Image (cartoon, rainbow over the protein chains, first blue to last red):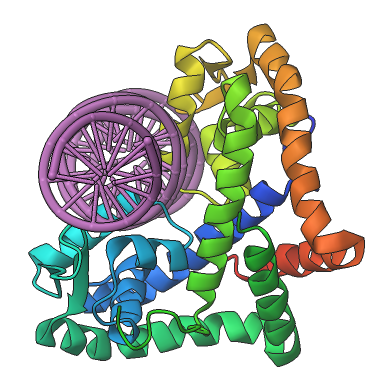
Length: 147
Length: 147
DNA sequence: ACTATATATCTGCATATGCAGGTAATTTCA
DNA sequence: TGAAATTACCTGCATATGCAGATATATAGT
């Protein structure tokens, strides 16, 4: 045990703070979604595809603030399990249209209680006011940090 | 192009929000640290080790809100490049003590301008008040979400 | 002292993340 | 129209993340 081992380390680093928060939150959602056989990444993708039916890889990646190559790979397990289909876009044959399958929609709906439980876990520690405040500030920050 | 493709999708999902924010912030830090040959993960690890000299893998993982196995692997590239050393703890030979090497400390100090530039990029979009507010709320949230 | 349990770390597996660089299709423009 | 530039996606590589399960050491209970 060293001199600082038990001390607080109030880091001023924004990356450290947001990455810790994202890890902890991801852990909670992943644990509560595990019984339904989805990660929060996957649950979120299915939800986006339910809303943005027929969207392209690039457009969805942009909405997710994610590199298109990352999205390509994140879709792989969902394709393999038949939850998502990629079909060639006839208007632009470079592009692929993403859609939720019937099975995928069912999977998404079935997992909702897990997601809901995680949402409540977070809402409970933030409270309604701080919850709304943080949401709007962070959404604005993401928007302002877009190139 | 589908009906919803250009529309806003105000997701209420906390995981979606925090993960997007973490991705964007990570991208910014990684880009600005790239000339110095470090990722923000690595820069952050060196900074923690500068402060917590001789800490164990498990203790550091806890501080980072990170699985110990993840930390083990994140340390690998830093060990390989000689920035970090793992030595057996004589008090408890199951444990390993992590230390910054001289080279590691130099690397850390050299990369500071990249980190500083990223910090300022974030601070500029948040402003001082929201910056402080978000920091304290998020730190408190992380604390409250610890098991 | 011996056994059972607990702890600290590591490896194997699967997914998550993004850069560099490749291929195919589209668009620009001389 | 045909070459050049752009766009959309993909694969290869490296790091980031965590669970299950293995190994080695330490501690507790008898």
